[in-house]
Length: 201
Ligand SMILES: *[C@@H]1O[C@H](CO)[C@@H](O)[C@H](O)[C@H]1NC(C)=O
Ligand SMILES: *[C@@H]1O[C@H](CO)[C@@H](O)[C@H](O)[C@H]1NC(C)=O
Ligand SMILES: *[C@@H]1O[C@H](CO)[C@@H](O)[C@H](O)[C@H]1NC(C)=O
Ligand SMILES: *[C@@H]1O[C@H](CO)[C@@H](O)[C@H](O)[C@H]1NC(C)=O
Ligand SMILES: *[C@@H]1O[C@H](CO)[C@@H](O)[C@H](O)[C@H]1NC(C)=O
Ligand SMILES: *[C@@H]1O[C@H](CO)[C@@H](O)[C@H](O)[C@H]1NC(C)=O
Image (cartoon, rainbow, N blue to C red; front, top):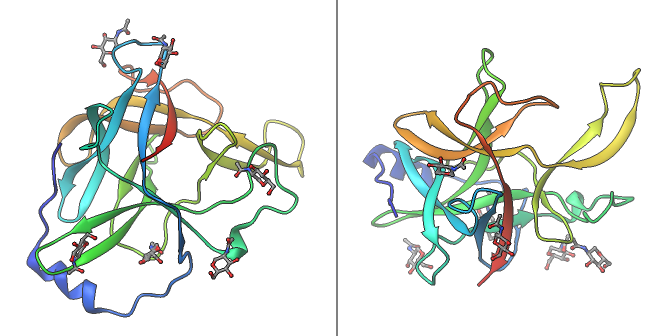
């Protein structure tokens, strides 16, 4: 497990006023990969240092009490009404960045590059991030609200599961969790399909 370090200047952010849009928080849980690849199957996700207060989701080894804990932050506004199949709530996938004298909630946000269809989920201190959900099988999903493969407008709330593990380069070369944008094969040839499961402590 790699624990990130943080530039001391960022400690200032800890004293700033934070709007609490997603202030309801789930119990802590671990994130575990499910994959056809037996090496990846059952491997946990861990927070990997990519830059000052920036982490990606790297591979964390088998599930143990030392595995990295994540939480799900939501609000009353994030109830899905009517709920799409198996999903009640959207919210932020969060990890707590711990410094010497501060703790900062770091939600997941997808980091996109216009030249690639492989986005990298990153954790950074913020009030906002990419809205995700957990379905009734505890699988991490992102809701699609419009099916643009059909004539528009085509409003249809559908859970999508475009998670992969790929070799990515944000600040370092790691195998990390990735998200493929849209209904396509990842252009990064190292990508392997996975699902991400939530397992409560
Ligand atoms: C998540 O919820 C906890 C508990 O209310 C709060 O301290 C934290 O700031 C929240 N994080 C975000 C990103 O809203
Ligand atoms: C992955 O792990 C699960 C849980 O241990 C197991 O049921 C499943 O058969 C495994 N799949 C593969 C492809 O190894
Ligand atoms: C399974 O994943 C490991 C780790 O990424 C990789 O080294 C191996 O080549 C993969 N196996 C297959 C059959 O794709
Ligand atoms: C969030 O917490 C508040 C205060 O405890 C509660 O009234 C509200 O119902 C909760 N929201 C959800 C979506 O559970
Ligand atoms: C950060 O969180 C840990 C674990 O909950 C706690 O022990 C520690 O006192 C917190 N630090 C600060 C500065 O709040
Ligand atoms: C959604 O809400 C229903 C009714 O409260 C509950 O039975 C179900 O377990 C919830 N599903 C999820 C994924 O939380």
